[in-house]
Length: 296
Image (cartoon, rainbow, N blue to C red; front, side, top):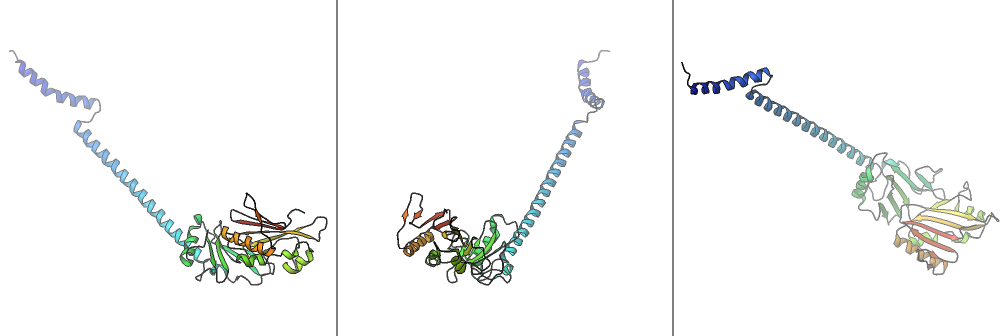
């Protein structure tokens, strides 16, 4: 009996899916619908893993933010131990230290004047305060904005507070330019070291050592270093004076010194002022004044 060609074609068409299924099974392939389901499952798992990673990163970032906030609070609390409530006054961290009080010895955080009185005192927060941000913030909030460069000046008491590069807070007295120049020991130059010791040094001081006096409106006290004649060791040839000041204050000090010396200085191209027996210069806020000669 002859089989119609249409029946043969239909049989082949019907057999194709079964053949493909058998091939997939023999080749360990999953049926197409199962593969689609597996693909969806894989995508869902990957999305869940990504969501979990995001959640962990978010939790970690939140934990770091809490730590940073707590650390910042601690920095501010430490800074408040240095900054007193009154304008340019020391906080509890300075304890019983007080400017102008007799001090028997100096240390890393104190400077004593030639009269044996506490001239400068410093304390730091013992903290990692990047850029001294917390200390600056507390001082500015408590005392107002600084006069200049992290320096606060109390014009009524002639006391200053300054934040140093190492984030310590320093308190010291300062003089106005006229008073500062008036205190310079011009009259001992050319005379004996005994007179210098008698008038400006403590009994236990080495006459060849430096001594300290109040500064100007910068962030440092005044350091004075005697210069002696090598051939005549008892004779004082000059004094080197170093301190810190702003440009306007330095210029006023130069004018006051000119009045005291009784002569106007000349000014060279480097901005250095010269007299016959003195010279003065300001370099990046540091004052160098040489009275007499600076080379024996």
